Image (cartoon, rainbow, N blue to C red):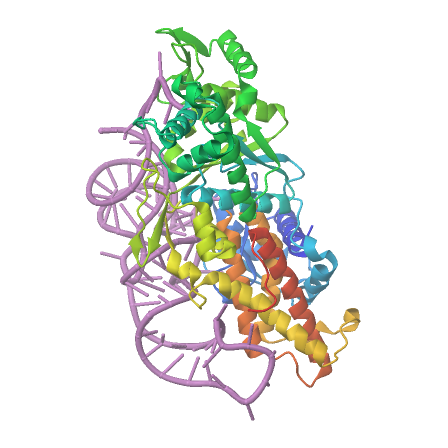
Length: 555
RNA sequence: GUGCCUGUAGCUCAGCUGGACAGAGCAACGGCCUUCUAAGCCGUGGGUCGGGGGUUCGAAUCCUCCCAGGCACGCCA
């Protein structure tokens, strides 16, 4: 638990009991009391609209209700002032004393500051990337990768028991296509006159894989290739490509707890679950195929699960996969998908319902598409032609930190133009540097402090009440707010909030840096500021780590 | 045709589980380096929140219709 959250909770409870105490108030149904941070600073630190919400059932003007609530409020030591404002808001002004306590809290909790128990250890799975192992990861995958990774970090910090998972589509048609594509290139390399079929993968990496096979085994697979025996080509390509995917993700700072192979579902798990649904009349036979009755659960139409030829569709595997997820005990499953899969959402929700779970147990985050911009112009990409920019290329060009920050700074709902030039720029326009620069500046101050021989060890005796300027108070407020930001971001499953908060905190520090010189003559003030700087460093480090960014000591 | 996402300052976006005069960065203009990194700070100007209607004490936020852009609508994965 964090200070800010304790204060908020106890204030909410005080308001609640004040309403219950006030005899003149006739309230039968008390809605949850919302405390919000007002946009305008003149409206206090927190405000509630509860009086206006109650106006209807209490049959009294909001401002009167607000006054009644205030009159019945017992005094809280962290509240400096309370007032009725506007149409009936109650504004609360916090005393600054509690803000100083936050510094000790940060020192004490260190890397764990921000950790809250909102999730109550509930098991949550975040499944993301899950790109087919038929080619290297490209820019489209990168956004989902960062969104999923940071979201998982946020949920973990918020007290959920999080597991990150990658679903490998290593069964099905596309794997044979992959094998075939490599086999054809292999034959071409060995001088066989043969054309690549229309539906083949045609990236340069396919030829490269074929070349590796030639280098290792010469023409020993030639007759197999000619006979259409694709197994070796398929398996070789699969292993190599999956390996590369893992390496690329690692270089992007992403590690999964579990790599789930679709093959493990074939055929037993799929049969098991389709039998079960068939027994429940949720799967039926028609035109020689087996259909899932998804329309019963809100989908536009029913969907084929077993094709006429007896093979399962992608959906069949997905039903078995999601059954498996819930059987593993996840209370909530979050899937991060590219927006091009949005047509699949209803049908998956239907699956979850049909399996006997709550629709809400499946959350799908759709990440809108990314366009790369270079010199203001769109970088052309076509997956069919095998002509796309890889995740590796982008990381190489702009660096891991810039790429990660850019991918996570926007709401997943909005289309994203990734400006390569901007991401590379080491300037004020580039938010990544702005945030990291705050950390580097702090390190520089600490370096100076060390050189001056200032004692840093007896922090408890330092009087933080020396910190009184607006810049100092604002910075303290941002630091105090971090756990709340985690809560908000976790509740709304919105990782971009934390990217913005990092910017905001950096901004509060830069202002402080310019207005409040740390190495002042006054030793008490110097030490108080030093403590504030150390606390800021800690929170910045926590935030940067949450976002998967490095915290450079100098820039 | 149907569904999903988007439309907020010149540009890129936040705010959208309804709240008090609509925010940030960039760009424009004007200031700040004899002390801790100017990759920074401070200030000024700039908006019918795509448009119409509705619900509400109160709407950028909810409902509805329309306009514009993107994506998706397979016994592919």
